[in-house]
Length: 171
Image (cartoon, rainbow, N blue to C red; front, side, top):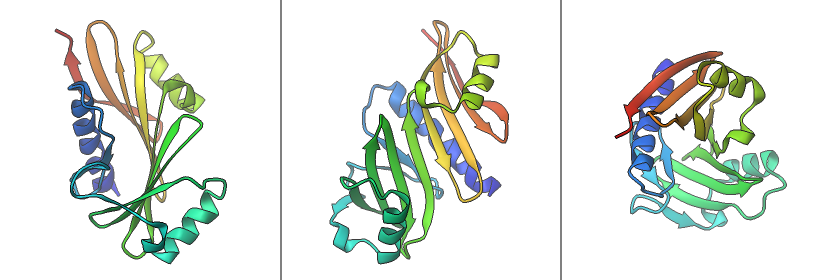
């Protein structure tokens, strides 16, 4: 589990670096340290009928109100992707239909109040750009990118602890 969390943090750093360079592709982290975008050659949009039945059942049970999701074939499984109330959802399933994780990407106003308070208690003058919330089987990790006029920081919040994982000065 610790290795999976470390992998997610490393991948979040890559995603932050891509975002900082002005690229707008939606980047998704995988626990095998590969980056996959939903628009590159290693992914392909697929029809629901091509998705493992176990994954479809889990998705339908968990997200019964969603009908416009898009499915993508990616290395090691499939991803269901949809937008709801300003939150981008990505649910990763393995080849056998087992849910691996759920990734939510959203703005500051969707952050849980306890997480937002923890960030604000340390970085009150920073503006939060976005949050990636990784929901794993037994834990949730938040990776938050924020900035002020002097620097850009990315922090990881897990188990009530906050840790700076990237810090760069503005030019």
